Amino acid sequence: MKVFFVILVLTVAALADHHEGHDHHDHDHHVHHESHDYVVKHHDDLVKFRDECSTKLKISPELMEKYKSWEYPDDEATHCYMKCIFEHFGFFDEHKGFDVHKIHHQLVGEHVTVDHNDETHHKIEHCADKNTQGSDACTWAYRGGMCFIRSNLQLVKGSVHKH
Image 1 (cartoon, rainbow, N blue to C red):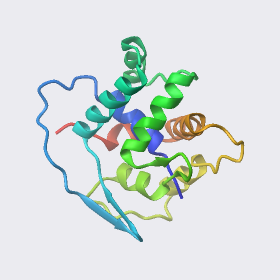
Image 2: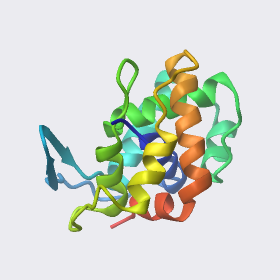
Image 3: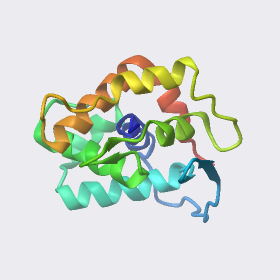
């Protein structure tokens, strides 16, 4: 299944308000699941992804400030920003949708055994819809991300922390 990485991306964007002076380390924290090999991302990854997506999509500094305050307006720029962040995290593919397992691994962290039958997994699955509405990829990613933020904001905020 796929994603809730949208929420994770939003969390990363919100946490990445100051990126100058941070030490950047190579992270090699692999989580294996079936054929997936997922590396849990950290604050420096979020900062990098945020900068890349905001530059690529020409996101205004004013809009970036809203994201850092957990405000995600229902507009095209924000929809595509979330999609971009989720894609960088590996949570979303515009053809396949969300990857629920990767999102779950990111949220619980790198040193925790993930129980894909727990309540968190079910909440992620609930929000990672199959796009039966036929929405464009940006709207699809935004819808999933906002659903997850509404149901798991504290978990999302804690999933990517500064070192």
